[in-house]
Image (cartoon, rainbow, N blue to C red; front, side, top):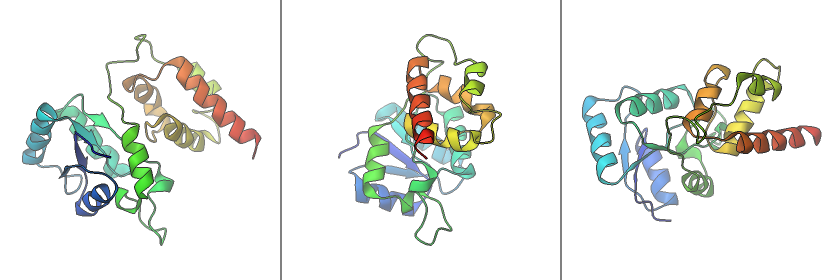
Length: 188
């Protein structure tokens, strides 16, 4: 698999994992304190070849995504669920611990954020509550599973509506994913 865009990762170990799984160039942020120089390189790469942000599914990774999105709007995003990025000893989380096929899968399902979903409407808060994604004892678990199904990553309850809109998830697509969540729950 040959990736045209430059993939933004957090560090050297992530670069090694990406290059093991696919043919691609990377830019390393070297942690969540992204320098102005790194942001300039990412911006330049976005103009020349396009950029895919592929950070760890943890707080620093989400912070890096937000900083890049703020400085370089329109970058693409690839996500891996936390359970696919846990180290063998179970103590660390990171792209460097992911299996090659999981990395390829994430890169095949890249999202480009938009200004809202295709209809211009966001999914109503009442629908999110009814889907047990907000204000329910299993809400966090369901949001994690939803993020995996839709390839948009995990988000907390406050940010869910914004993330769905940002990645242009339509109501029909959302409802299909929620139905899968409900089916899986019924089989447990």
